[in-house]
View (cartoon, rainbow, N blue to C red):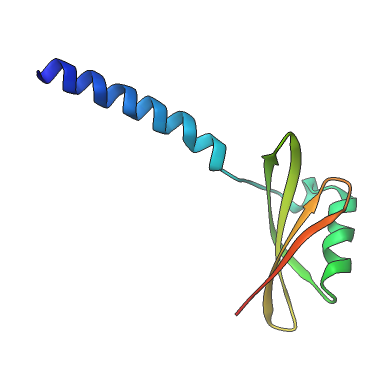
Length: 92
């Protein structure tokens, strides 16, 4: 019985580890963010001072999440590699 439980736990651990990569975003240096992405984020939020960037694969394309401040307000902007703004979120 203990062997079956241990095998089940092993498979569960392997499965969860494999799935974790699906939800993981990768922090990237701002110097590695394409110019079109920066331009798209800055055009979406006037006065945006970019603080960090993450990249993730969504449906076969890279989507960047740009985080920054504008007038003391936090913003998150999702932008494609070509600079198309997908979503702007303002955080209090």
